[in-house]
Image 1 (cartoon, one colour):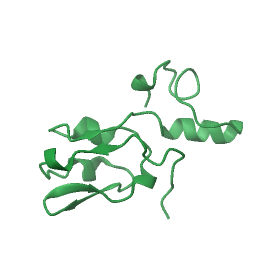
Image 2 (spheres, rainbow, N blue to C red):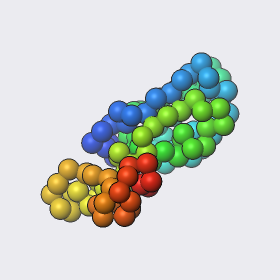
Image 3 (cartoon, rainbow, N blue to C red):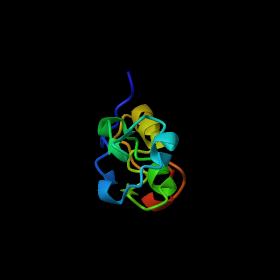
Image 4 (cartoon, one colour):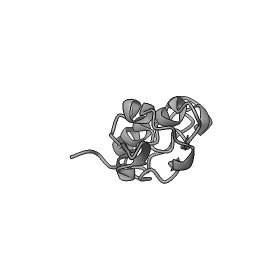
Length: 103
């Protein structure tokens, strides 16, 4: 059973019309969030998205957008250990003070 994340991929956006069906998102996603269907990427499981940003960084046409770091795996683990909500920034994730630099 795949892990689900607190934000459940809420910042993940896929513009299907812009997608060229290259499959880069499928290849780089560590949690099988995407599938290729009818020659286009589709979101198969938004709840398993950890918002790492790999899909958006590897999409050659910019059909994907995600606020990387919101579901940062390190933030989730540290939050769990501290008994707090996952946060990204400062020393709670990657040492960065901004979400854009995290993860």
